[in-house]
Length: 185
Image (cartoon, rainbow, N blue to C red; front, side):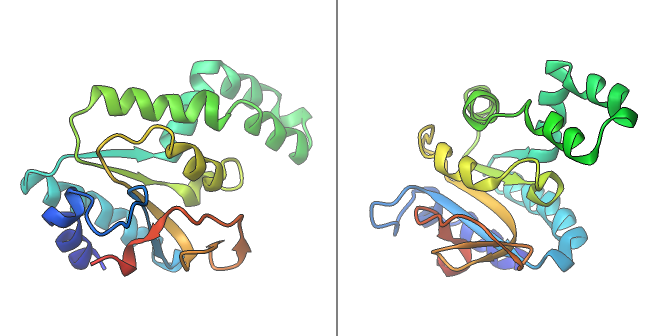
């Protein structure tokens, strides 16, 4: 999969956003969650290979972003201090309440895009933030901040160009604007 991805992502056709039929350059690269460790390793290698080919990648790990948001707001410390006295539901609600796609995640993307020279944006770590962050609102909102760089979301599940199925067993809201990278050539 990653050799094919290198060929596709390093092609002028991809960089120039050709063959999209007027659609936004938002791509989903689905993969089997059973291969998560290898996928994480290959994403790092792919970034290095593309960088060596002169294609700079802005990489966003949603887990690292989530921790940064929690730390910056002081929420992580508060939640961890009170964790023993909380039910699982309260703990989860406390963690979820501090992240808002429009108010925290998308502005972070915008700052990174402005401050970083890049040709492609990689978003990964979806497996580590579920169920605290859903990818669907991010996919919807990222359309509002697109610049010239395509977005590639590494998705641990199934995407058939019509619906997302996280981990191959959790159906998510339909997302019609993203393209399955497996079908792009």
